[in-house]
Every structure is written in C-alpha cells, then in structure tokens.
Amino acid sequence: MRRYVRLALLCLLGGLCSLLYAAFCQLAGSGQTAAASRRLSQAWEVSGVRREHGGARAAGSQERPQRRRYNVTRAQPVEAMHLAVVACGERLEETVTMLKSAIIFSTKPLNFHIFAEDQLHVGFKEIFNTWPFPEKFKYTLYPITFPSENAAEWKKLFKPCASQRLFLPLILKHVDSLLYVDTDILFLRPVDDIWALLRNFNTTQIAAMAPEHEEPRIGWYNRFARHPYYGKTGINSGVMLMNMTRMRRKHFKNDMTGARLRWGELLMPLLKKYKLNITWGDQDLLNIMFYHNPESLFVFPCQWNYRPDHCIYGSNCREAEEDGIFILHGNRGVYHDDKQPAFRAVYEAIKKFSFGSDLVHSLLHPLKLELQRTVHTYCGRIPNVFLKQLTKSIEDIYSKPSKRR
Image 1 (tube, rainbow, N blue to C red):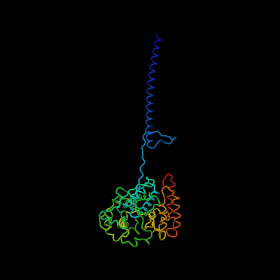
Image 2: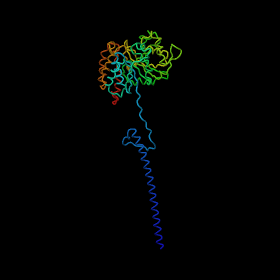
Image 3: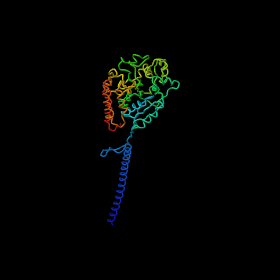
Image 4: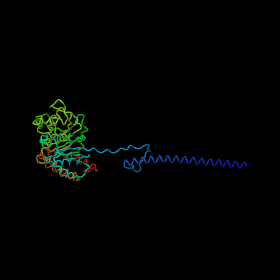
C-alpha cells in the first residue's frame, strides 16, 4: 500500500514539473518574439531612412546598431545668379554673343533679365529656343520703361535706353542681387567668380565697379569732367555688380539737399542739376552718386572690365598681365570695326562657337591663329593677356567630365 502512495506522489510531482516547464518555455518564447519584433521595427525604420537617402549602403559595409531615426537632410536648390542687360537698336547679335559667353563658362544656373525694345523680343525668343541645356539658364524679356513724366528725357540720355540700368533696383523689386553688363561684354571666366565678390562687400557697400582708367595721363574724368566723379579717374559702369536690397534701403548723401535721399528719389534731381554738364549719361550720374557716397562702392580690378584703353597706348592693366582678362569690354564698337582687331577676334570666336562643339578646337585654337594677325597693334602685341584666363576656363571645364558645355 505504501509503495502505491509513493508512486502516486512521484507521478503528481512529475506532472507539476511538466506544467512549470511549459509555462517557462512560453514566457521565454514571448520575450524572444518581442525582442525580434523590436529588432525588425528598428531595421524597418533604418531601411526607410535609407530609401529617403536614395538606397542602401554599398554591399559589405558594416552597420552600427541603430538606437533612433536618422535626421534626414535634403539637398538645397542651387541659387541662380541674376544677370541683366539692356538692348536697343542693332544690339541683338551682340547681346546674344554676350549671353552665350556667360553660359559657356558658368557653373551655377543663370537668370537673364533682358530689357529690350519690343521689336527685338521675337528675335531673342527664336534664338533661345534653339539653345541646348535649358537647365543652365532662364530668361525674362522686359519692355523698355522709364517714369512716365520724364520718359523721353531719360531715353535720349547718352545712348538709346542706356539709362534703363538706373531703374533696375526699382523694377526688379523681387531680386536681391544683380550683375548688370553692357551688351558689348564677353565673359572669359565663369560668372560665378564675379558673383562671389558679393561676399566681399563690407556692411556699407552696395555696388561694385572698376575704375574708368588705370593711367591718369589718359583719363577722361580727371582731364575733362565738369561734374564730381569717384576717385582719381572715375568709374566705368559697363560691369556693375549690385546688392539691390541695400540700394533700395540706403539714404544717399547728395549736393542738392541736406536731407538724404533714397535711390528712386535721387535720380531725377541729379539729372535736372547736371544734364548740361554730363557727357556719358547714366555713367556720369553714377559717378556723382558715389563721389558723395564713396563708402558705398566696392572697386574691383581692371581685369574684370578690360577695355581698349587698357592696351591702346601700351598695356596698363597689371592684373590682366598677371592673370589674364576675366571680362572683356569692347566699347566704342571695336567688335565691329578694324580699330582693335584683337578685341574683334575674341568676339568673332565666341560668336561662331556652337554649343556642344569642342572648346579647344572650335574656339581656342582659331582664336590663337587670329590673334597672331593682330600683332601690328598695341593690344595685339600682348595675346597672352587675351588667352591666359580663357585657356584656364576651358581647362577647368574639361577637368570635370560630367560638366556639360
């Protein structure tokens, strides 16, 4: 009897142990499932972030344990550079050649603001529609507009439409900074580089221009001007970099009233006072403005606005001799006559260049050959000044194979 009782107790104890073991296994299994669930959730979060970044890492790379979501950083859009030009009369071809030179060498996208007489608008559109790489530039065409009460007076000042540039801060109110250039400008270096000079402005500077002359003995303003002008030889407004937000906010000192005037308030009084004494129109008015407000001007070297005056009587732009011409300014019509064949050679080379062609064989080599025919002139005797920066700009393009031309 006692033997049966012990056997029953052993069976009861074995059953109890089996129940406890089963419960323990179920509990352990639940913990493993939860841990696996957490790991899967973390993996899903990580893979989701990776998809936002464009895919998983390369095969074979080591992953660190993830404790939280990554902070997703999205690429910021590249800020476009704003370039303005005013074209009237027979300036369509010249303007298009200038814009082509800007596109060839520049890296950031360009926004062109083209102020032109109505009859030129169709011509611009037809040409731009044939240009490749629309991602490199956008353009807006504007009519020529002046304040209605003085429109005729402004339009006939110096050359037709030239004084339009004075009103750009008032018309392009949505544009913070702007590079204005004359139609007879050619870029031999990326627009990006002169655009970067905006970062060099101090807190008082609102615009940047180059001196009118390097050599006072041949300077125009210091010998003939009948009005105030900036510095020793004046400034040339064919290349003008502007922080227009500052220009709109500034109150300018002047010689007409003790009160300081804003940009829009200053223009007409200046014209009325000096219109019988100015020769170069809007450029003279800018000289007068910055004569009274010299702290507002950033002066860049002559290689950013290289004109025939820098070589017609011998080379006098030291910076261009060292580093080459950055921006060529063919004023006085030298792109279209035989007075300065070196300038004309550069213009013709860029005008004839076709987008997509090889820059070395289709632009640089033909230009070198043409410059050899200009050595009988003072400017033609220094071909390296015309070629040095252009060569470097082309080399920079081809050092980046993904860059389109």
